[in-house]
Image 1 (cartoon, rainbow, N blue to C red):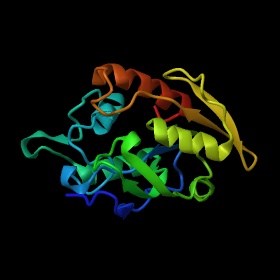
Image 2: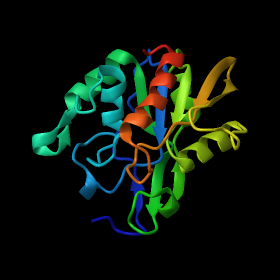
Image 3: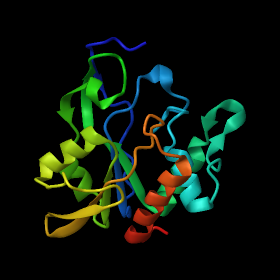
Image 4: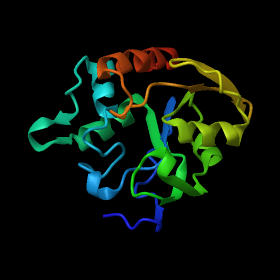
Length: 197
């Protein structure tokens, strides 16, 4: 169980393939008692890896080990490496105010090095800030006006003489009321625009 109020440091290393064209940034992982894998989107009820399976293989169960209620983490890492999809979170250190991973229950203690991540990804064409707090942290850091962005849209921003798109997509959390197949349609459009599909 997570000690409410304790400062937590991000448990995972940034996954930053140097050839990545997309950077996925969440906020911070859930408490470890909710994990089914020791990697990103570790909660079995989160649909991120089902969305990836639908978009790239037409099968939401592609990365799912249903019998063991977990994900095929080695296959996920190989897939992300091969496709050129980087992943980390916007927060390096947080404090949980209620013991959940909900944005409203997280106090940001230290942000991740967003500039450093983008510098390490010279081919990055897009950033998906997954969730309201992740988007708020990212847009505040880069001075991006994104308040009127609709689902599935992106806004371009400049970073050190590069133009990168910030994408808004449906949350992969099941708390967001949309069927996983419909969420995948939004993500698929982004993958096409960035050149991953």
